[in-house]
Length: 191
Image 1 (cartoon, one colour):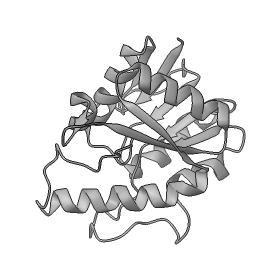
Image 2 (spheres, helix red, strand yellow):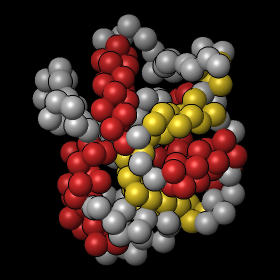
Image 3 (tube, one colour):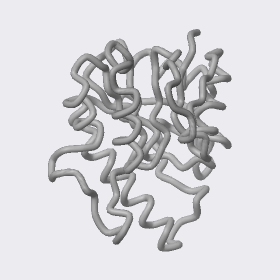
């Protein structure tokens, strides 16, 4: 397996790194204090809060061409925690794809909490990562890496499905913040 670059070293960045490292990938972390790094991976995971995307794309966007960009963000209005900030029918992932047409943008991991990625389970079921995107080869490569890392992954369809994935991620976050579910909970896909 090749190198995978992960922006962000918080709970989600570490959880995703653990899965992908178990699949045999070498992991390059790029933190917010770093500047001028060369992206080593063919797969780049944006494991950061949505507002950080603008800073990352401004600093590293010229390196995105030809790479698979995995957007894990949920574009919440963090001031109210009551809505998504992308236009209706759109998604953060779709906006990334529009800004970087030579990249292969995928939406993944945004419907998972870090604890469920680390444990590999949700309510007794195997954790499932939903992956949406328009490039079949990019999706297949990420799905294979996730599965080799010990959790399930499912092709959730075209990049247009990122809209629904972000809405699902938003719902799950609001339930956890409202203490309706714990941060170790989540939605499970039972086959």
